[in-house]
Image (tube, rainbow, N blue to C red; front, side):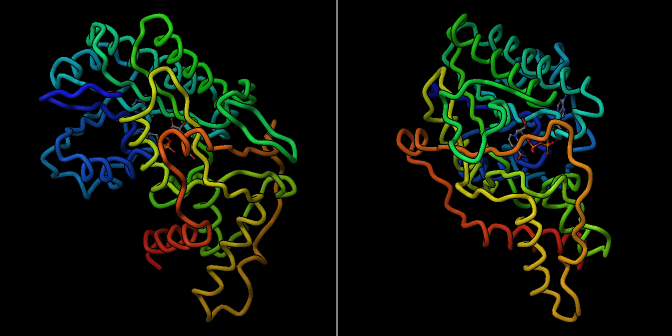
Length: 334
Ligand SMILES: NC(=O)c1ccc[n+]([C@@H]2O[C@H](COP(=O)([O-])OP(=O)(O)OC[C@H]3O[C@@H](n4cnc5c(N)ncnc54)[C@H](O)[C@@H]3O)[C@@H](O)[C@H]2O)c1
């Protein structure tokens, strides 16, 4: 459980990215007694446009800066008397980690360490919560059957997942060594509004409406589980407040689809919305050279969080996907 303070100010890192910028408005609205300090470096992946709706919120402060910056993080803990942390900040794109892994090691490992270490020193044994956001990719790849659970062993395959796995281990060590009140959540692929254009679903939508090829890796058979970002936000809030110290929680959407099916579904939605087009958007789908070391399948057994925290993903995939397509059509002003 999280301690209650008269001052309750939580440091959210990476809040200008996809999941963080969906989470902050939800969290401010749900907890009028908690202030949020959002520390984000505004890399290519972060945008303050994602947070326009909370810009003037009395409980919200934005700080541009690096989670690896020791002095900055120390000063933030002191200045705002930080009483909790949720760490979203990361380099998050697997393809970039294959092309240039160095920044992944820095932000994901060193940055998480810097946050943990400053929290440990500033909190001096207080029972404040540190929630680390991680990924199901740390567990490696599944075959046709089976699911990841909290007991699955770590087998990261990409520089991205290896850097996230390392950060998860650091978080774990701060529980076992210092008794810090940490939790880690590992989720499947998120989808929804505000995701960066580089990711699969925005790429499919953008390519389709721009009339260019819709690129699908390999034979399109790689399978992911898809979690609507709003469902994820509800789960994170629940874990932050009620998760057991030292524990890991897996969140999934129970929506396993291969990449080709995702592309076909999006094309189908677009075909219905743009009736004046005389061919299907699916004609633009083209297979391209596969990602190096491409994991075949991820799938999540989320029964622990359902049982312990009464959370489960509620959004149906087809309705979530339609909401996502609508958001991007609006973004691209169509
Ligand atoms: N999106 C997914 O499907 C998914 C799935 C599983 C886990 N995750 C994890 O969830 C978290 C959030 O993912 P996302 O999709 O919102 O990522 P994102 O790439 O959209 O956003 C990351 C944010 O972190 C910021 N950032 C990067 N380096 C920083 C640094 N050194 N200091 C401060 N800020 C920095 C960026 O500016 C950006 O705003 C990540 O830790 C990621 O590993 C995401």
